[in-house]
Length: 110
Picture 1 (cartoon, rainbow, N blue to C red):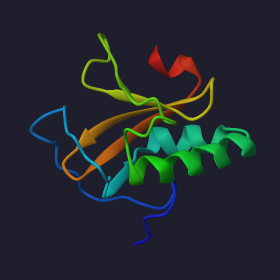
Picture 2 (cartoon, rainbow, N blue to C red):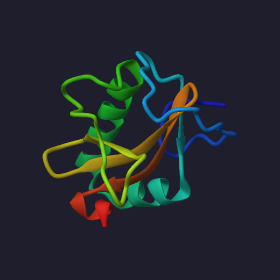
Picture 3 (cartoon, one colour):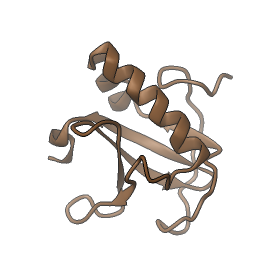
């Protein structure tokens, strides 16, 4: 199974014991169907930016270029990182990886 892009993977995931996982490398990313749908609707240049930031996230989820941060209520337990100034990825850390739930403008927080 390829582990290279948003539309290509699906596997079982196990929730981590703690949301405060300090990973230096993300082994797996699971893309939800909502994420894949939102990704397909993005302009091509934003899809390219998502692909680049996805690779950066996998090598270092706390890279300063991502501005990775915890979200607060009502999205407590979820995280976000920057794709561009206006686009974000909404995700959750899990054991050995992450689940990407959505991608889009700040409207994804609603």
